[in-house]
Length: 253
Image 1 (cartoon, helix red, strand yellow):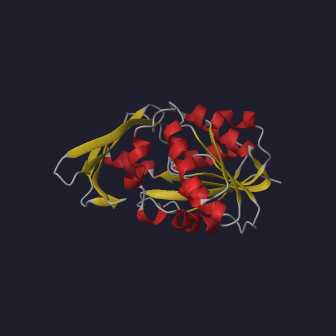
Image 2 (image 1 turned 135 degrees about the vertical axis):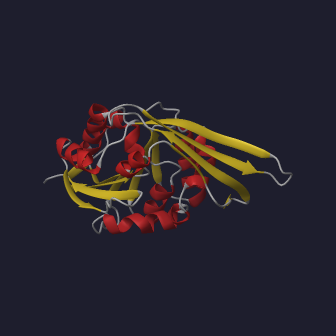
Image 3 (image 1 turned 90 degrees about the vertical axis):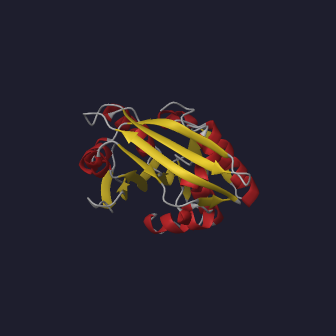
């Protein structure tokens, strides 16, 4: 993915985050049950950290956290959130394929959440990204990934979604708008527009957004990709009728 794909969206990313994942406390509470009872001081890599609530929340729970993202805008927001919260989080601007060059010691857990994996440009790039992430996990360590249900999306075909309610963040109100168009084949480039129309007190509307490219995959394709990367799938919340799901995998001892 282009390193600046999320830079403009970073300023309004909070408007598209689910309410329960908006704060460090809520985000950590949502994911800790999948981290296999990590003890305080365990090393965790959040390698698609976005604006940082998960990385900061895990650090506040006593874990040693490193956060990386390909977007400079997201990295800047994560650093600002960590500073504001007084959380000790090492934050780096880094693509997945550059993880091996960072010199990190192996992690007890690696997370890749927020549907970011679909921005890897096709099956080969997706497996390369997963191999880089798997290489950061210590033997016996856990890997956690969240994904959109692309089978469900492709069944619905091209679409437009305007949220049916106003979202309020930091005292400002906005309306979230999604549109997407799908290619004929799974391996072809697909497109997704995300926009947030911010509503001013004077009636003015300011719109910020991004046009994002993505390369979808099925649940079965993802399981095959995890195994090809050296990870053994363990659990999955996948349901054919549910929009998003979470999978865990482990690096064999």
